[in-house]
Image 1 (spheres, rainbow, N blue to C red):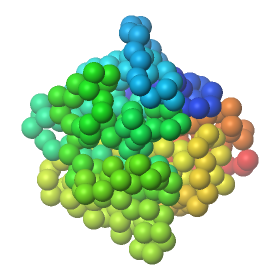
Image 2: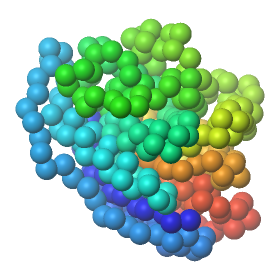
Image 3: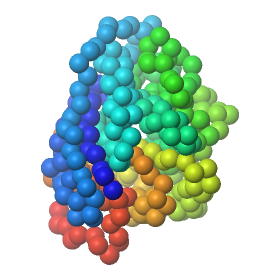
Image 4: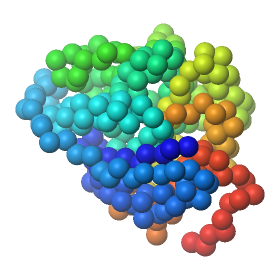
Length: 306
C-alpha cells in the first residue's frame, strides 16, 4: 500500500502544551521504517501548518484559540481530501481538534467516490461538545459534534459539504462523558461501547459487529486513535488520562482485526504528548499499533526492553 505520513503539530485545542511534538516523536519512534518493513511504500509529506488565521470571537468566554482551530480545520480538510485521492493518509498529531478538519475532508472524498463513509472513534471521550456547551473551552472536545453536523458551529467553523451520518460512527473505549455531551448524543444513533461493554463482551465482539456493518455497506473506514483510549499504565503520554482504558493486547487485537477486514483507508493518531512520556514508550506503542493495523502479525512482534 502507498502510505502517506502527514504531521499535524497542533496543540491549540488542548489545555496542556506538548502535543505539537507528537509528529516528531512518532517519526523518532520509527513510523516510516516500521511500515516499510511490512512491504508498504511510505512517503513522509512533512508537517502541515496553517498560514491564514482570521480573528473570531464566540459568546462562550471559556473558549480559547478559536481562530487557530478554525484555521487548522480549513487546512486539514483540504489536505485530507487531496491526500486520500490515492494511497492511505496517516495523520500524526497533534490534539484531537485535528479531526474537525481531517474527517470532513475524508467524507467529501468518500462522497466523490460514491462510497459510504464510516468512522471508528477509539477514545476515552466522546468529544461531542458544541461551542456553547464546552466549559473547559478546549476545542479538542468538539470535533465529533461538528463533523456530524450538530447545531452551533455555523458562522465559526467551515460549512460541511458532507456531514458524517451519526449512525456511521462507532465509539469504543468511552469512559468519560460530560452531562451536556450525554444529552447531545441522545437519540443520534451513534454506536457507543464504553469500557463496561468491553469488560462484559470483549473488544472483539463489539468491533466485529461494526466491521460487519461497514463491509455490508461497501464503506470506507477512517480510524481515529486517541492515546487515552489506552490505559495510562501502558500509554502515559497524554494530558487527558482516564484510568481503566484498553489494555496492550486489546488495542493490538483491534488493529489486527481492522487489518484483517481490509476496510481501513485512513488513520489519525492523536493526543500524544511526548513531554509526558517515559523514554518514548507511548510513541513506540503507537508505532507498533499502526504496524498491527498495516499487517504485522502477533508472532512478528519485536522484543523490547524499557
